[in-house]
Length: 85
Image (cartoon, rainbow, N blue to C red):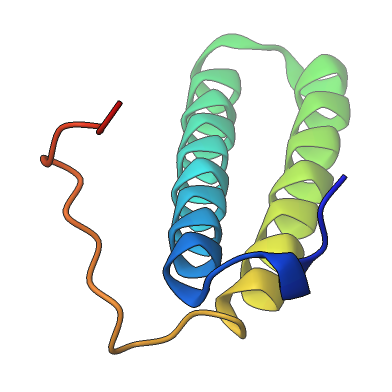
């Protein structure tokens, strides 16, 4: 396993952006699940499921806030650029 010191700064920034995008997607999915639960489930089931989803969202947000600290605002990643072989 390589350490951060063995990565170039652009590689590290790309990794951070990928992680942040993944966490943002996970949070959106969990928030959508919460909306679905609010519409479909009964009271006791609903409260339990909402509590678990809320805990999941808080954990995701905590990770997102942690990794965002490493993001260089000057680094621009072009997600439409093709991968090089």
